[in-house]
Image (cartoon, rainbow, N blue to C red; front, top):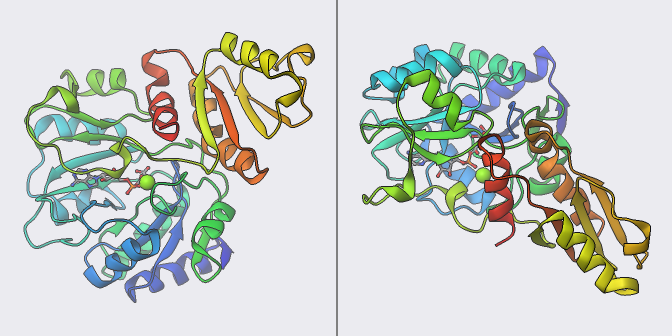
Length: 330
Ligand code: TXA
Ligand code: MG
């Protein structure tokens, strides 16, 4: 059931969360599938609904930084600088967990992922929850495990069915999931790139951001960091613009059931087959992130067999989009 996120609908959703139910929640990044973070039985329903392994930890969403001590045992100075700079906003911090709190949500880790979303509906819901004694809401992206994250209420319903209460807060602005920084290893470590870039993180906290694979210690599990993720049904192939033109030309009249997401529309003389669906790829990284998942979903729904994507430049502002594309193409 999709409800426009009125005050009444937000109050209804807050009560449902307190009662241990799941709610589809808009955030500025993607839609989440929410449950009371400290109710292990409710959190277990998330894992079941998504088909997600129970040892993959979830992000706990809080109304404000004042709720951090409920979940985190300690906040390093550089993490506090990131909170001050970017919350509310699309940044998740992994912090040492308060023992005994949100155990199911943490998937067995002794750390906890915390994020304070900026979307007004998420903010209103989290504040309403706090007044009911629910101080954090676990919410992974509201898609079936391994699939494309939802950026509209209708996407959530198509993933998880008509029974789920979904608050409709419109299209997600950012379009890809939050940047995740692990703050449990003495230095900031990038677990997942996103809208908030490495350059911004380094400027805000005055530290160099390390890469996960540069560290020898075993890393915590993170679904968004699995090699294959965010996959539509169609096969995604990443190529240069020149390769796309070349291969379309080579296919000629056989180029059917094909989606193309590239900056420049393929020339008519290169597209011999009738079944090539072209969608314009923005040249701006933030605009491309906003479109990415909905384009993959829409082309999938059109029944194409393959989606050819022009690989964007290897520059810091494109890191989040390139990461999602690379995983969707495995
Ligand atoms: O933008 C977002 O972060 C969205 C919206 C709904 O807020 N949420 C989201 O959640 O992307 P999810 O569960 O799809 O991705 C959460 C990522 C996973 O890769 C998870 O494993 C990682 O965060 N994560 C959560 N807690 C962690 C922890 N304690 N240690 C390491 N990774 C953790
Ligand atoms: Mg996800």
